[in-house]
Structures are given as C-alpha cells and as structure tokens.
Length: 152
Image 1: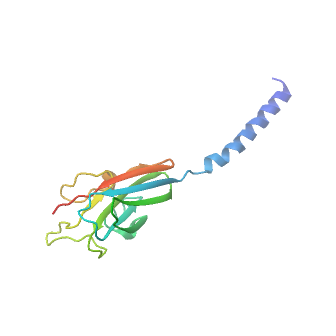
Image 2: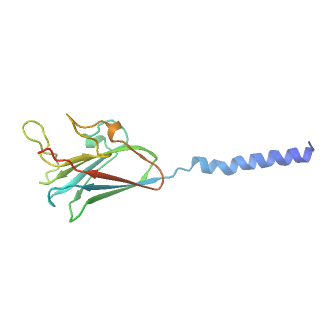
C-alpha cells in the first residue's frame, strides 16, 4: 500500500471514532403514558407508584421511582412520565375513592378499593411480583393500560 493512502486511512479511522463517541454516550430518554380504566365511580383519586427495581414493589411507595395521586375525572385517569431511561418498569395503582391516601382493606386484608398493575397480571393469592408486572420502556413513546380489579 501507498504510504499516503495508509496515513489517510488511519486519519479517517481516527476521525470516524471521534464522530461516533457522542452518539454512543447519548441516551435516548423515553416517555411512558399510563392509562387506568375500570373505576366503579368518579370519586377520589388514583394513586400511582412506578418502580424501576423490585425493591419495594408494589406497596412501598417510598421506594418507588415516582409516586403521585391524580384526581379522578369523567373518563380514564392518565399519568405521563417523561425522560425515563430505557429499561423495565412496573406500575402499581389503586383507586383511592375516599381520598385518604391508602388502599383500604377489610378485616381479612382484602382490598375494598380497586387496584391494578402494569401487564394486568391475574391476581390469585396476593400481589404480583416485579417481573410479572414489568414492562420494557424504550424509544420515545410507550403506553401502558391498566384495568382496575375489584375483589369486593
């Protein structure tokens, strides 16, 4: 090979690496739109807890990535989360019909208010785990539909 050609190829190779560095370090942030359906009435609020790990899921909102309550309107209740890193997230929600900030239960511990989870897993003897409820969030816009369940 010609010496000039080798130098030019080396230069282009180095230049190519520098142009790729910003792209590999840049992270695309994702948006997650959560919609909750199935409320028995239009009273109170819907409380959301979004988890990025299994730690605390589903009931320890202090360990959640984001916790927020949204007043119930005339239609489905929505929450939009922006600038999430790509990854797995699990969402736990409940319809706090009386507005006390708690998922109320009867004397046996059975919820008396509607509740739900991302992926809408079937509830058997207790709350699902993180893996059963996790949804993969990647790309610009992601949607999760949660159907509230009512045991009583």
